[in-house]
Image (cartoon, rainbow, N blue to C red; front, side, top):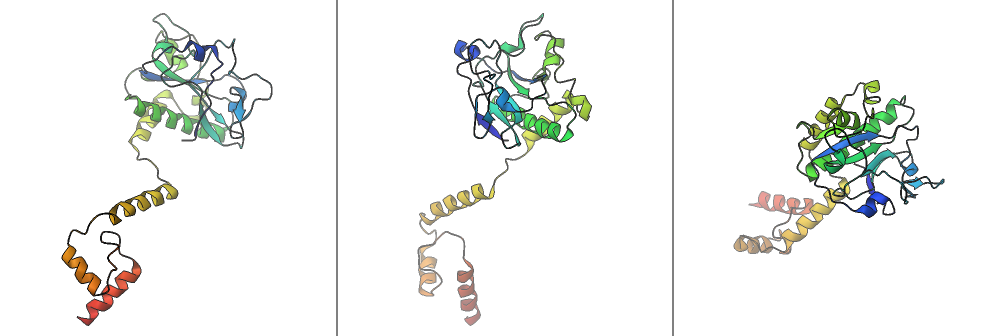
Length: 254
C-alpha cells in the first residue's frame, strides 16, 4: 500500500477532536472529475501541491474524511491519511437511525471522468489495501454485515445522507461492494510482501545475533578449528562457499 500522512489540523473537524471507536469502514468517492489528492490536501513534493487554496486544511470546511485515495504528483496512485483513525470524521451526515460518523472510519476515492479503467483498477486496489489494513488494525471482519459499506449503503441502513457513491462508479467496471468486501477479506489473508532490502536487513540482523551466541558443541568447534575449517568466530552462522570447499577437501582425505 502506498500510504502517506498529511493531517488536516486546521480543519474544523480535526479541531473538534472527538474520539471514535471504529466499528467499520465507509467508502466514499468525491463526485468530481479530479483524481489528484492535492485537490483536497495542501500537499508536498510527493503528493503534489494545491495551487488554488481549495484544500480542506482550513477552517470553515464542514466536512472531513480520514483519508483520500487518488493520484500523487508523479501520477502513481496511493492513499493519504488526513485524520487520525480514531478521530470522529464528518463524512456521511445522518440518517433515520443515526450517523455513521460515530462508527465508521471513512475515506474518499478521488473520481476522474469515470471512464478510465486503468485508473479505476489502481484506485480500487489501493482502496482494498487501505480497507484491509484498517480492518486488521481494529479487528474488523469485512464480511460481517455492516462493517465495510459505501455511502449509499449507509443511506440504505439509515446512518447516512442520500449519496450514490460508490454504486454509480464501481459497476461501470464490473465491481460491486460485495466484490470489494471479498477482495478486502482476501487481501487480509495474504502475507506481508517483503522487499529485497527488508529481507537483506532481516538476514543481517539474524546473522549478527547468531554470531554472538556460544557454540552448542564446543568440543566439535575446537576440532573444526584445529582442522582449519573455521577460525572460531562463526560458530552458528551459515557456511560460506569457501568453508564448504575446505570441508569437502578434508572429507576427501579421510
